[in-house]
Amino acid sequence: QVQLVESGGGSVQPGGSLTLACQASGIAYRAYCMGWFRQAPGKEREGVAGRYSVGGRTYFADSVKGRFTVSQDNAKNTMYLQMNSLKPEDTAMYYCAAGLSTVCFGGTWYNDYKYNYWGQGTQVTVSS
Image (cartoon, rainbow, N blue to C red; front, side, top):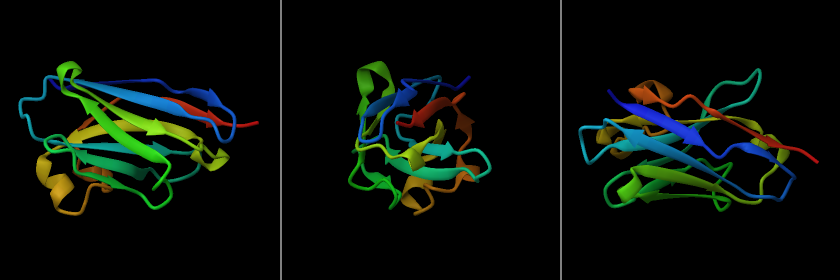
């Protein structure tokens, strides 16, 4: 079965950086959409970034554009969310999710209900 395992969360001061990793296993298709989401206490889950696994087309929420990047290592079946210039408002539980490739191309990468598989989440805390 499909399994997504996240790692890399932690605590960092404002302006710092963290890189989250999402290792996927059991995905039958080479082409799929990988989404990164976050949820802060008392808030709805929001899409942070989406990436098409073939070709690397990537989408970002306005709130993280210019600060976050996404990369992937196909040999390790792993996608990375590089987070720079972190702000206290970036504090949240971060999740990766995988769905059909059409999720990315339909302009709906930020809709969490369109993803079929989810990681367990990793906490990111930005505080001085």
